Length: 380
Image 1 (cartoon, rainbow, N blue to C red):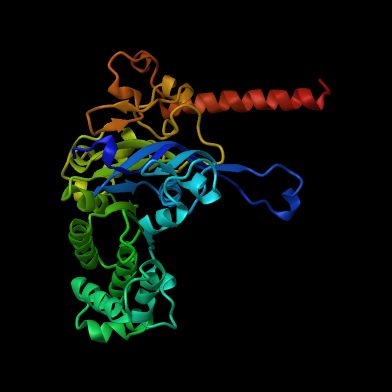
Image 2 (image 1 turned 120 degrees about the vertical axis):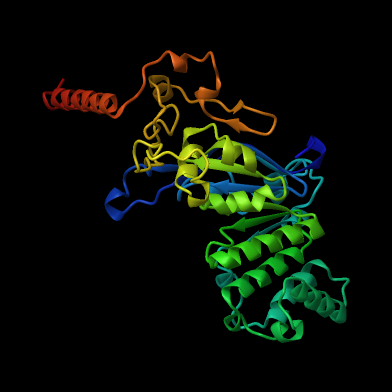
């Protein structure tokens, strides 16, 4: 995709989102733990672009998505819509060129469970009229109805006069998702966050829904930030339109690139592990051995030092345990947080980390802790 700074719809720079973990009654006098949900992520989303974020549950992709559209306030970094800081606009700070009301209209969301986002006591027509009444007050009632019926037919809900007067419980899961999509598009948004928007659908309906998203994106010139735990869905939604796939791990964006680059030439060991575990990718560089040392994901309250993936990475060296990698460019469209893309880095000279060496290190650490405890007990 050929893009310039002039067509950036949304820009996130060094975004951090940290949560204080709630404690029980017995822990009320202790300091709460901090969960690093998103840690230092920078990402630009361009006009009419599709970006899919993938990763295991708890990696921070949904939190990052909600931060992008202004539903989650970051604890660090900045989020800008067309050069306007979203939170400065909301708080009324500084010189505001784009009012927060316009930003809210431009950044929309489709949820995983559309049923919970649709009022069960209102008919589809009433649900879809609400945003038009609020944001496009110049439209008359006949104009609103005509536009809604046209959109219902456009997404395959025909006859539209029938669907317009149904309640949400009279719709299938796919039909509810279409209504939620129409409601977002009626706002004429620049960016839509699709948060696991197809995960609850059957496989055949997922393909149908993603094809519909492609068609509507071309018609409305809307960008999509697509959140998914399914690597094959991320590839499908991005590959046809020249989009990008971003891979997240423990709050960090560890790799991003075109769908072809991520599918066929991943650079980060975690991306390779995700690809290995996805059935649709098993014909691409498939090996019998799973490219990961440990299944368990580290605690986000206390993430590993250095590269956060080093405790599970089969390619880890001791440098990875002590030094956090920066983001390195691989091509014009692909970048990764991994020392292996640098030919002359000290990573290559440092010893490899194996399960045995890690066990010895943990035992040594435990011994040091025991010695400290004995000293404290002795009053030293």
